[in-house]
Image (cartoon, rainbow over all chains, first blue to last red):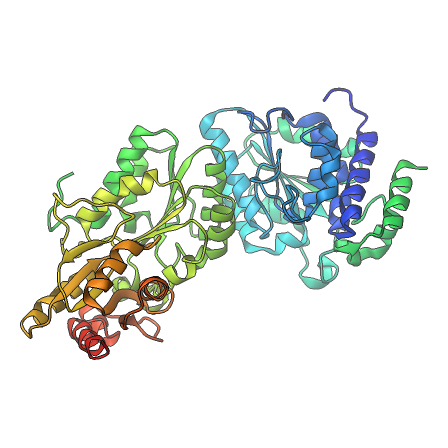
Length: 272
Length: 314
């Protein structure tokens, strides 16, 4: 895509998230809305992909290790044409190609299955090594949840990626500060998160993860930085852009979205 | 490769890996700080880009292998049997099997073969844990010759495989002329009174029991069943129809592995009395194999006793 209005693109992704989860009536909406701006920047500007050829050789890959944000991934994939927006309304229906958690064997454009937290990130490290071996010039992107960062496997993978100086790997932490049970800081605090990643050999940026320009700048810098894997810690708002999701706080991790709420949310996002 | 009675199974594994690494640029090998034990460390100098020792992080190794597979590579991952299974069980389930990534899992020194590493390293439940995962093939080689013939078939198999192998050299029972098909059990000795279905190191034990029982006038058929999943229904049912009684013998807890697969097969196709030899409600412990066979009731006399018990139930 060229010359995309990233703010407008992020709005359309949020609308699609609401259509997707709203059609079912319940879902992991908070952690989907928090990464909408990132997905706009990646798919609008940075990622090398082809909706007509989802398995294109040498494509960049995105692993959504926080697999429950599947609907956010589907929202952007539909927006850029991997499949029809009508398909968004089949989320979690029997036989759907859009399961709650990302499945590479069901959804065109999904590069890795995820859902058991921590594993997707290791898979992304495997992809980055694969890309290095093939010398295909791809960049591997991974999105990690903040709660997910409590998984030991995240740090196993982080240590090996740092050791291997995988500079074709760019990871993001969706640091919305909330997980299913409570605030992250009340369950098992991650701070200082930037120092942790630096200690594992990563180059770290900390940005406003709901600011497309800040994300664009950080990703551009990260792509140019060589010799280390890169972590962009995104300070985000869980449920960003939809007032009742933001107000639900921790409750937005998985919540009901009535048909009326869906319509109201879409109006809010569009500024109507 | 020339296979003799002295050939170590780890030498067979390394020979296979060297062949596939040399012939296919998509093959990669991952170890988790046990490459020296598996013998695979000798490959690191020959294929420095495609042999990765990821450190003591088995879960990461399994999921990384899945990522490499998704990128078009053919990964082998290797560790001791307990770490290659229970330590990364969910990664095998989700990253590898559910995601349909064709990773080959090598677990060495299963069950009492862990010997001096003791109970913590003694995988007696590994097959039971993996057997209910769809599509995975579970293969426990009988000896070096069989492993030599089986590994190319494992390599070509279109689904993930767990190879529950030894590093040393269990008795060489397979002849160079024997046909090995990983999807088939093999009748090692024909008989008419009772069938022993055995796997791994218990095949030799079953053969010894059969020889002893012959002197008492009992005719034993020994079926070697190296692939526990998918189980060879045809061969097991045919033997049960012939003898009318079955004993299972395995280097594993009697729950979940060979005994379970055989009982499921027989109950659905041709029910006959079954007795079992294997570990019963015990954890592993340190010791050499002769001691452990006695401690875990996996010796020749245990098989003989089970045969007599099952014949009495006919």
